[in-house]
Image (cartoon, rainbow, N blue to C red; front, side, top):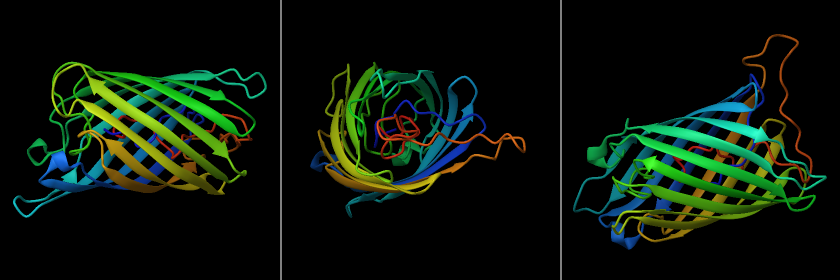
Length: 278
């Protein structure tokens, strides 16, 4: 459960289905030998509920390439199920922050013997604040705590099995135009137990392009330090909305059109807020 992107405060409109697909390729730290590279393809689905709530379900397909001394691994990883609540909307006029919280449970559906899953049930609470710094720029802050389990997806992430993990991150996004957004982020985590894989720190620079309303493409470059982070990596993906799927005819919800300075409906690159992406 690796955070390839910091989660924002946005949630899907009631009755809307939001779907994201992404593919991330990482070159691993030398301390991970004989593990050399990991490719993680992830499908995420979100359903908007009334009262600012959103349900999330996602799962990865993981391929771990190893040196010739041992066999590689391929298969599905652990499954995330969670809920996010946006309990305060922000204002671009007054610069007041939007606030949200999410809680996720990760189930050990991946094969831990091949390092495709952690073999643990994980419980994660994440607090989110998003502030419009200007008409085109916004700042997002995440603070989280993992009560049980670990943050690993495959062999990337903190792999401790006891104690707590504390996470945090900051992102800055800028709307270059109504369709094109640039941004960067720093994200990290630390466990309160000892071990070489107890610390994670990584950065990402990327871009998002809105092809049309309800469809966007995104990509980013990743660099990390410490054993729990990828050394170098890249991610590409798409996000698409299906606003009529759960709506009665004539009452279809419409996702809010983002204007410069307003909090976006999705994070950049789009993220379901699951901790599969830490």
